[in-house]
Length: 555
Image (cartoon, rainbow, N blue to C red; front, side, top):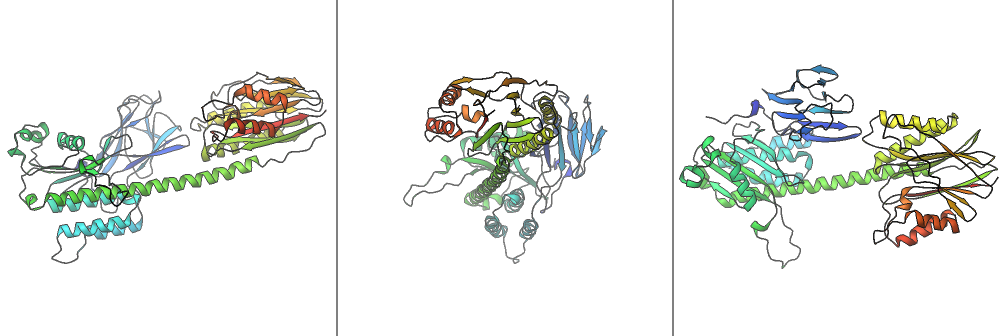
């Protein structure tokens, strides 16, 4: 009985180890590595891709590999499986095919049979895997050269391919039939990162290895090297050893490199180092060749592999941090434009607004529009942080601005915005909004969509009009109603975001509505409100943007 690669899939040195799917839901997306076949999709929690939507069947579809190609196979789902918009029962997948499972236009996957890598990486791996230095060069010398070059390459984009080449070279050195690299994910679960046989074929399935030895090596942080399992009574009766006739089994934990903080610090024992994965090799025959390869050399291979993985993870973390900083800069630029409001002058009212941003850029904005039938003010807070919230806030501001100039009623504006949010499926985004319009005679209309209740300050009295509606973006059929108040000369109508009322001090206490009402009753100005919030927080950083808008009716 020989070992067979899964469906005969091969991967050349210039391709990724496993195909991948890009899963898109709303404006969020993530990459999923298809490191097993068949790859299951459905609503059940045990599926490889779980889509928690009632239109997705519990056992919806499979993606299978056959002779180097991939097919999506519907499993009798109620709402069907679609490839590029056409319902299919079984369909061969091509690069960039869009596959939908019951849920049309809301969630889908893009099939990507190969990981993208740079031309430099492909050239490097192609050269190093078949390097010919001299006829006397041993596989061990090649491996040493490869590891040194891989350390210098030091990039996450080719880690999978580096692991493949590492396994290929180690198989030649050890004379084993199969080799695997397993890595732990962020949750500590083990995943197959690379699998190859001695013929250079990709192995996408680890069902026929000795999982008991793999588990023991990881749990005990110990190395296992058996050149003839038939000589060990304990191993000879293990189910996987017997079932798959395994005679040679090697498993080396991959340990996270330890940084020595001081010159005189004692060395760290290998058994106390954090295990990040394992290198696993096996064969159906007892190998005398392995005895000539010292245990120390195998340990060096595992140590260097762990170092490569850790370096790649550090590069990835640095890249993620760099992209995050770029996103923050973009979001900050968008928010600055949103807050750059030109306040029109009208004879019957004055308006002021101010925003105090926290570290994470949010989706607050306010705007003021002078229309033929009054001065309109809008204050909004889009859920979430970063670029997505800032972009959505910009879109919302543009919609409201255009509708106000078109003299659309306030309730109709909110209905239109809500329809946009719900129909576009914006990844569960929503917004709280309060929009007001004051006329020359002091009549003020407002629509509160889940926002902090406004403050009506008249003399030394503070009132909180409580009329409200649902935030926009939650329910497609939500109805929006307005309320009215009459302003007297000198009255102030103050709008705030929840970043003000939910500002925290070092003890975790909220600034809350009572403090806001108290300071508004005494000195209802923007500066006094922000000074009060700042004094309450006492240096504790803001967790959300604080925005305050003050409308003074002069009559």
